[in-house]
Image (cartoon, rainbow, N blue to C red; front, side, top):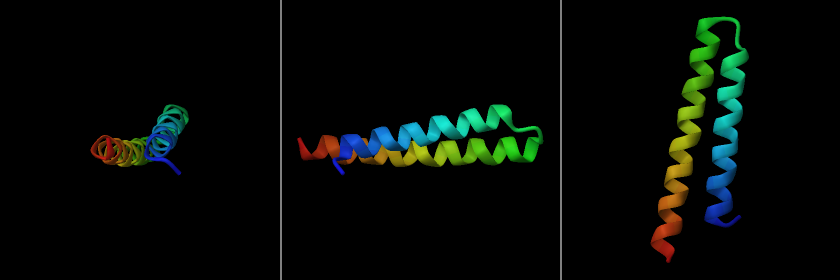
Length: 55
């Protein structure tokens, strides 16, 4: 998988976690989904940085 595709995939997963957080009924569940979204975004940022360094 190319880094750009990798970053896009991670962003997609982060957005999915945010959607699930919006639908969560319990606050602890919502917070857990938002933490996962943040983790996916960190992965996306790392993949983007790796991609930029290759250029």
